[in-house]
Image (cartoon, rainbow, N blue to C red; front, side, top):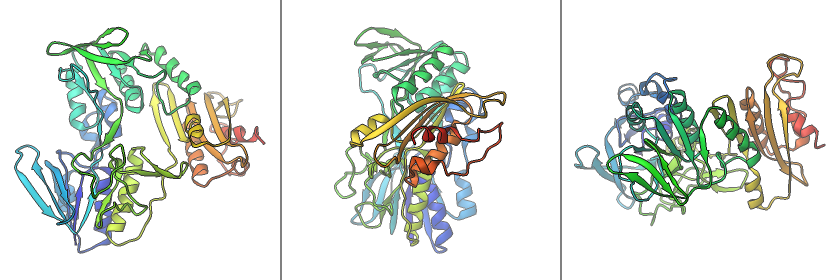
Length: 442
């Protein structure tokens, strides 16, 4: 069986390894447009400020490891430009020479990931405007910010906040420029305010409700003109999100969603026989919304890649879906969310209730406790948990993970009280903060 996988990172190589384990006769070829395989994109902001020593440290396995140890034909610098599903042929060009190539498949996985969204406006061609998605992006940013003073980040989501922290840590003046009225749009506004406070504490400027008009400068960017005023800057990082990297697909046979994500069934099969898709280029079933969604995260990519690889190798498995869990660090606060926020609950038409409280992460009498702002949302009639958002210090990750498990199993607030969670004064109170929130509503 000839397996071809487009994409050499999380989803693609998770699938390749499952095929390797379950099909001893497998002939596996993976095609990557760049030089790097299997690296941790989420670690890249921390390379910028030196917490991670170099981009080399985020690489899990090099192409030669897949070739020599697992007999996977891991090719680099292969840019795919077309998939002929009738003849089952993938074609493209060598990234550096532009010479053509083609390869036949019996089963194909598309795991091309996502690419950074770029602002389409005047001045986009100026130097000193970057985004962060890959190892080459990271190395370019590190080289170019050395001699600049003021950096403007357009966007305040996960990557925008992590880059803001990293640049601030190496002594840059940082401005976050937003089209909306808050950072972290995945959170409700009362929690986002805590992040604004943390930014101001570290001398990061945040400008809200600005419509970007054009970049200014001659050769190198020197400012951003908005509909209100001009903001001088020495460097710009666009962090306004990502979109599925599926431009090479025509969408006629391999069906795409409106945003370009590939439609898949629970087995990660596309609308074409023998073609699968996984990771940031594909849709993700959301258990909370009970419909296809698009929340590109490394955890999901690895899980979907595993499921796709198993099914390609003949082992029937289904992707159980996501509940929408995420977490990030921003200076001294941890920001976590799982399930639905209030905006999403309203859009879905749920009759709901919510509560927001500030609680301590450990026993109140034990020294060193840290506050966390917790928001819980639940269905009004059944008391089934719908979402959990937390901004605070130590212990946010633990509570978000408890919430994620509860959401996966559609637990009600009463059932949260029965959970046998670990307790000792340095780690928790006898009633965990999540349980305290639930207990107050019963």
